[in-house]
Amino acid sequence: MSALVLAVLLSLVSAVAYAAAAIVQERVAASGPSSTYAPVRRPAWWGSVTLNGLGAALHVAALAYGPLTLVQPMGALTIVFALPMSAVFIRRRAGAAAWRGAVMATAGLAGLLALTDGADADALAMGSRLVLAAAGFGAVAALFVASRALRRAATRSVLLATAAGGAFGLASVFTKSVAEDWQSGLPLGELPILFAIAGFAISGLLLSQASYRGAGLAAPLATVTVVNPVVAAAIGLTLFGESFRYGTAGTAIALGFGVVAAGGLILLTTERLSAAHHVKPVPPPAPGRRRPDTPDQTATPPALR
Image 1 (cartoon, one colour):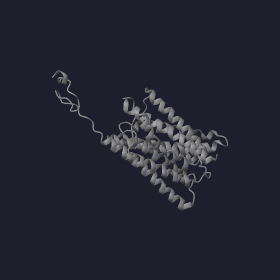
Image 2: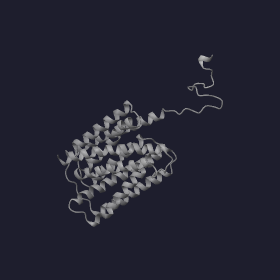
Image 3: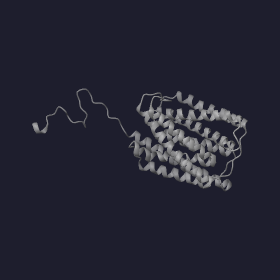
Image 4: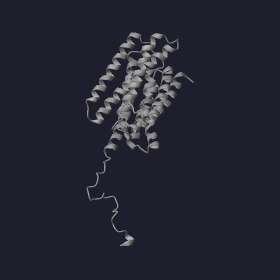
């Protein structure tokens, strides 16, 4: 089995684990008044943390065998897997538009996979890594502060999910660099990068949990799955010297496939949000009145009339 095939298989199983974790996180956010960022008193939340940890471990293993431009786009399959999984486990069925979005996302990712060059990437100097880590933490913090100033749950959710996706993407970038250095023995000088990975991973977990509050599953998850690979792939292409096959033409085609995948994810999001928008709550009955669809408990039964 080639290293590229192994990276694909590990990425697929990782996406399944992340999808399961997202479903649990959304249910925890929707069903309890626990802390928005870390509902530590909910056993289900710890289950989602375990699933996220499993997905992260498989993701790290995939990064050890494949380039960022391959492994990160594969992570977008999380929302594709989340559709049937949510239908099975929480009885939330997807409509035709959602499945069209899933097909578009899968086709776009398949195109990216076919054009990915598995060549070794260039190493990034320690000084550049530290500058990138500081800039990344600053950007995540700025998005978090901006979200605190917003009152609309939907907008706040998108900003928090964007921050979470950026944090996860940066964690993947630094994990890739450490995984490459590990092959020749990990020096003590890598400790700051290990702390940065932990900081980005924890920040991403807490921010993603917060993004599900009042926004459902689809919109936050789609935002995270789009932002995560975009951030990591952009860094891989610009700083690590990764590339696509066939030079400039291959890169342009890969960008087109990326647009198709992103369009599928957007279609998934809008379909789920539209479905939620059309579900109108039933107003409570006025005093002394009953609901139109509720049998009159005081009426005389037919047999006694």
